Image 1 (cartoon, helix red, strand yellow):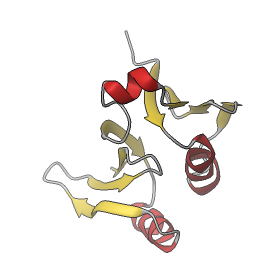
Image 2 (tube, helix red, strand yellow; image 1 turned 180 degrees about the vertical axis):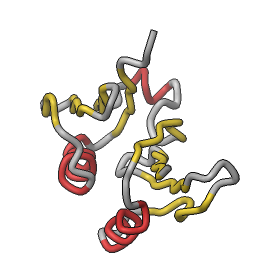
Image 3 (tube, helix red, strand yellow; image 1 turned 90 degrees about the vertical axis):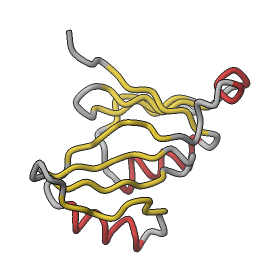
Length: 115
């Protein structure tokens, strides 16, 4: 088995599209008005939160998703300049990689990792 997809819930799909498609330049598979799908290794599905997702607290939380990047410092500079909320700036980890945590427009905390 392997991970096929990861789902994130947001209130503003247009803002999420600007973040994931435009700012991060993730390759889109499908960009619908209420659901965005990106090829991020497994699929990354960004979905309009409905009443059930809100009631279950699925929007605006720590996503537990790490996207691999080749230059985390350059990404940090680009995201900072764009006004993104950096929850945890790039920090070298004991295992040798570097992690950074950022809030997407929906408040979901997404991690970036450079090995």
